Length: 128
Image (cartoon, rainbow, N blue to C red; front, top):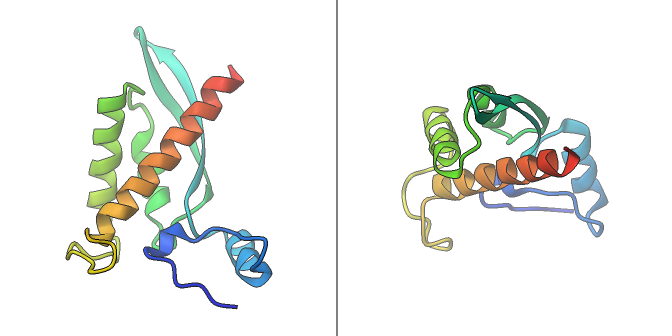
C-alpha cells in the first residue's frame, strides 16, 4: 500500500487501505481530530478544553489545541486564533505555491485544522 497525501495532515483511514488505516489509527497521526468542550464565561461561550484524538504528523494539533483554551467560539475570533496558532508552529509545509494545489501547502494545512476545530465544536454543541 501507499499514500502520498498533500499535505501529510490530510491523511485519513480508508477501507481499501488497511495498512495505511492501521498506521493512522495506531500512531494517532494524519488528519487532525479534536474533541472540544465549551463553557459560558462572562456572557461569552469559550473553549474550555481541547483534547487531541489524532494529531497532524508535525505535532501542530497539540499546539493549536493548547492555544484554543479560553478562546471565544465566535467565528471570526476563533478563525483568527486557529490561524495565528497554526502559523506560529514550525510546520514543515511550505509557503511556496504548490503547482498541483495552486496554493501554499501551509494554507491547506490551516484550512484542515480550522475545519476540524469547527467539526469538534459542532459535536460539542450537539451534545449540550
